[in-house]
Length: 319
Length: 259
Image (cartoon, rainbow over all chains, first blue to last red; front, side, top):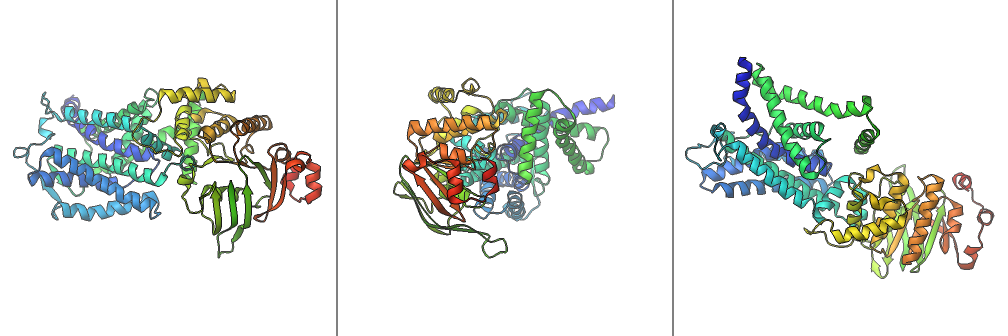
């Protein structure tokens, strides 16, 4: 019984954390699913956004200004990866790794060579804080993160419905066709990477406020959590959520599910030091599920056809 | 008018795999010409189309279309002048997007893509009418994902997309080669209808000699990266496969087989 009461007590924290990381996962969705690029920049950006936000606030900046600057810093990181990938012809994964590596030094500089920077919620007007997680007020981080998520989904839903947004989706779906239809594929990739990393940095800024500190290692393994959220969301909700906005929502919910699963595992008594191992295992299983489904599970024809399309896309990607 | 002057293209230059694909190609198309292109494997047919489209740059030479110099324009900028259909039905459409979304992308070819709506209701009416002309019933499946269509349906859709905004030049790169004979005929018929309706200047690569003779007002044969045969007008009208084979003594298995 103690297990359940402990879990129940920890649940609001898991949900808040999940929603904030869900925002980050929406950023990952844009590169991974919409643009069909694996962007590892986010492991750096997930620390950059928080570092910029915390340092700015400690220097007296308004929290909204700090968030905006974090967003811009993320976009700049995406711009660098984009230029490395398109203009310099470096494969996307490697371009992301290079930016991520460079960001480690930049993040240290932003944080004045400190690996960790705490911000006192009593002295600064934080938008989200861990300590409000069980309060039934508008300051509850679950509420604030949910508002951010809904706003982000609304803006992205609008954007990807515009001519420009559609051309970005086409770029990810079929770059050859896109070029033949006069779409500047390189520009779109850079733009997509910028938007994605901007959102990730925004999530990072919120997460650092939530925790009450910025950390140089905050982004380590972030891409895996982001992918976990994307994949879990897809596995759980893909059959009912077809619309683009709902797909983004399923990513956010995927992150919440992920953090609840992690919380269950931790409450059951696993060591926090094993967290990365557990994360990797959870993601591996959820990645395998769609593959196993298409290979061994023969459902009705429509589902099989859909599975073949994704499988083919993967084959193309490997070629 | 399309002008190709002194085009050269070598792949893998300086390696053991060096291949001179295009070797001093000169070709001029008048507006309204429907030219079929035949030739053996490696003759340079597809390479010619790709050079015109800007998939890769020429080593030397000039590409001019209606007076515009295209030679150094990147692929996506040339797209405003060109309609293209590829051999692979997967290549010309975005499988994960809907039929109307694909058409909306093509509708914006050569226009700026800003923050206006990606597809409007007026456009949907146009797309419905145009899809109906294909006679495939696609006008009732406008929101279906293109990935659910057959190869023939996808090629017909790609053809429609290539001609939705009237192109100055239509490039067809063996666009029926991956289809079964019946579907291939249907797509070729559609091609002829659209080309005739809009009076499009067209370059159509094919491996099927009958098709090359049947369609178009001019036939060229390529070999080793240049044009070796050029037949037009009355002579083209009376041409038979036998003539073509005898006259030019073609020794290409694939072309003989597809007769």
